[in-house]
Image (cartoon, rainbow, N blue to C red; front, side, top):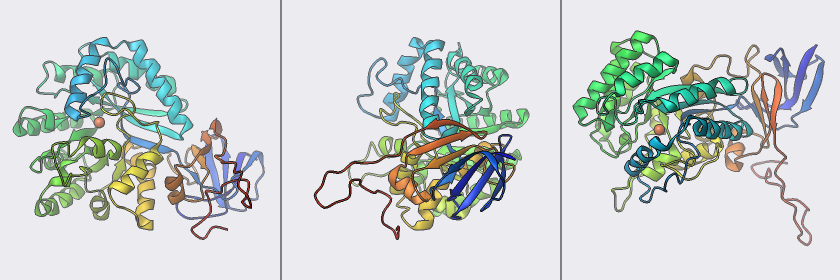
Length: 428
Ligand code: FE2
């Protein structure tokens, strides 16, 4: 006897008419016409059931702080960093916790059940670190929060940053972060990469650095990050976030760089909403997009995820925790409009970041955690096209969020009473 069966599911890999049996919080069976019985059955009615969305790159300490104490007038990355410096002295632990919990509510409603968040460690009080460690425990029953010790002002450039970063790791922060392009010189940026990778190797931790987040075609920190990964045997545990300078790099140089990233097993995390708004700000026209080379990295076998990065903070005044909006933007910016390419964009907000974060039991195979999202869409491409409603979100087999199906009532002569957004593409 199972606890729950989801019947007639479409799966992200293209299988249709599949039943998913759940027992003790785990997936027990994935097959057509499952003969078993269960305490509860839900009819997915040919709609998509997927493991949850995963955000590989976020800043939960600054989220929902938009307008505090003022808005970013230029909209640039550097004014955002300066503005965050103004916000920091005003922060309280209670306010950070409250905003983070509110964001996690949004995330759960959107079927986003795992987030890797950077947390600024340059404030000697480590207020944000303590706040997010508290939040990590509070949300653990329904959301996996992984924290990255992020020296926003530069681990070498900011006084005390290295000591603060080590204290944050001692307190239980999961991942080593960095920001080499914000150090004083390219050489010091490379020194910071070496130092931080050595620290991660000593402590057996993963690495995720803000890396080459600029339009500088000569920025070379991802090369150093990949090389240090090989030197220290960190393959499969390191990610480079943003990598926007790769957009502007010389093609010959990139033809050497991408194989190096493959050799190092370094993952790439693009943040399409933020990259498209913050990069190219010094250009006139033509104006560069600034997102890293997503299809080329994917084709070479580099694991690629899309992150949300910011929601209503000093760098970005929009966003709502919707990883389908992120995938939608990534797809457009990278011109990934082929069928397989669009499915890869769905993968970049689900399975790919789950692997980068090292999530245990993620997926749709028997034995995996019964964390599932039922979408008002028939397949991943339709989910992205519609930024589909999350009809039901399950954590360990229990429903933790529902949302009514999106419908539009029409009053048009000789037309149906409802608009059917699921039509088209060979649909019935
Ligand atoms: Fe970031």
